[in-house]
Every structure is written in structure tokens, then in C-alpha cells.
Image (cartoon, rainbow, N blue to C red; front, side):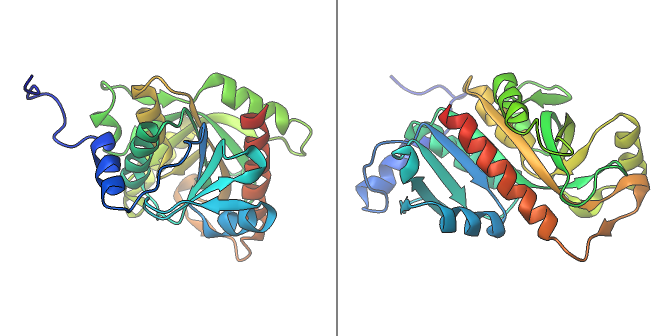
Length: 251
């Protein structure tokens, strides 16, 4: 049967098969879940704390956590942005993964969210271009309610507890216009990032659960950009989120 004109020319499964045939990707049991960690500081923390098995064949670095018997994997070192995380998510779905977490840094849109504050995204405004290729038009895409609830419960005793609410994904950090930032702030949007809407959209297109959570690095509230001199609180926030997300995936 000839493929229809509405099917992709290249599928993730075909790409993985090509890599395996060329010795670029080994055969191994697929993890059940993947945690994406764009920031190097978080990857360094995970590799210090966990025994891992590295699997080559994917963009960036891909590790199976031995504590989870290879059921949870870490994807890192791939850069930043919606296109790269969407492509990787597609490949991991083809591999057999069924659940996804994004743990990254974001910019605060509210003056009461400082460097190191934690934000759990309930849904992400689709200000990037990738999600339109996966879902029908809509303003935002939701995180999985069970995963966000589990993460919030894990962190409920933290002071202050993480904020839960809408975030905003954009492809263009140097085109976050003051009028748009102020509008988002008035709408109650908590933070801005570069990946979550894409990841959530890919997962939703496969009817798979995914969630995103952030540690605040910089502030854009009131249309003024401010970066802390010391990012260690933001980096520590990433480790707190990772540990909680891992517990959620293992529970």
C-alpha cells in the first residue's frame, strides 16, 4: 500500500531503525519514562548522585538510571529550545517511552517569584512554532494533572511551596516584548521558558502523560530584565525538582 500524501516522509521509528542498522544505536530495553534536563548543572548533579548506564545514538547524552533498573532515563546536553526537545520526544516515544518530565530554568513574570523559586506548569501558552505541527490550534496545552499533582504533593512541605499555574513558551527570548510581558503578567502567567509547550504537545499527540517544572533563574516582571549575580539558588531548585520528579515516576 502506498503511503498517503498526509503521512510524514520520515518517521522517528524509521530513523531509529536506520541508526541501529548502521551500528549507531544499540538494542536495549526502553525506559518507561524520560526526564529532560537542559541545564548542565542539573546533569552534573544527577551523574554525581546516581549510577547510570550511558546509551549512545541520541542527540546530546542519554543515561539509564540504574536505581530504577533502567526504567527512568535522563536526556541532557542537547541544547535548548522547542524543536530539539520535540524531536527527541518523538524519538523516545518510538523507542518505547511512555512518560516525560521537563526540569529546567525559566524567567519569572511575577515580582514575588525570585531566583530559586519553583514553578510547576499546569499548562503552557503555545508561543513557539513546533506545537502547531502536533495539535490543532489552541492557546495552550495542559500538563498531565496526575503528574503535576504528584510533584506538588512531594514538595508540599517545602517553604515556600512551589507555585502552580500557567507558563509561556517562546522561541525568541530576545523578542519578549515589554507590552507582551506585561500582558502575560496581568493574565497571571507565572514564567516564560523555551521548551514546555513543545514537549507537552508531542506527548499529547500520542496521548501520553508529560509535565514540566521550573526553577526561576531571571526576572522579567514589569517589563524589566534582571539576572541574579548568584545562580546557585536556581541550580539548587533544579535538584529539588529532579529528586521529586524521580520519586513521582517511581511511585
